[in-house]
Image 1 (cartoon, rainbow, N blue to C red):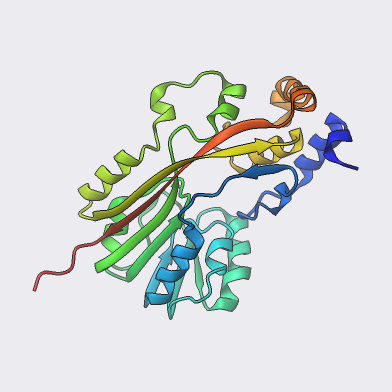
Image 2 (cartoon, rainbow, N blue to C red; image 1 turned 180 degrees about the vertical axis):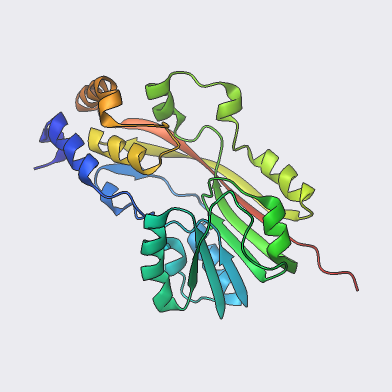
Length: 259
């Protein structure tokens, strides 16, 4: 039975029962689509990992992106702050020889200064540039794909109403450049894209908002049931709900040590 012929209650119940740990988005197959950035973050990250001797993956989630890299450096460490993801990442990464460290995302990194020649992160909740600069060796590289401004805000504003500009622009890449430079890093690459997202059934919307919890803070099905039902009817009548994600790629280098 296709999702188009399933009831609102069935779709919502299924989405509420689905696990939300890790960053495996395979549950959305056939139910939601998102264009991918042209730069190919996972491939580019893998190329840099293959050249590194000591690498750190910040906010690794369930470790899925790092675990997919063809080769890992002799020293590879990943951090994660949410305990269900720590367990998932450990199961994926330990067989690859990588160490997973559980640490709060807003605390100083538990590593010595100049410990890594490569730091990577995909979609970090927040980027602590001073800490990244501290743990990078001179000549080291920070390479990251991040969520840009007003990402999927068509969906956010459907539930929360119009958002102020400071909220929409809170992930502005120009601010990231300024923060990186203030920490003593040189930004050598910055690219931004907006990408089409389609939700084909209400279950995909529910699962997305349960998984990406900062989009609609405090989201529960009970709290938003009337809006969810209205959106379900709209999707059934008009087709997929369309939004646009924002992504940017940033690469910053720590200057070499003076001779």
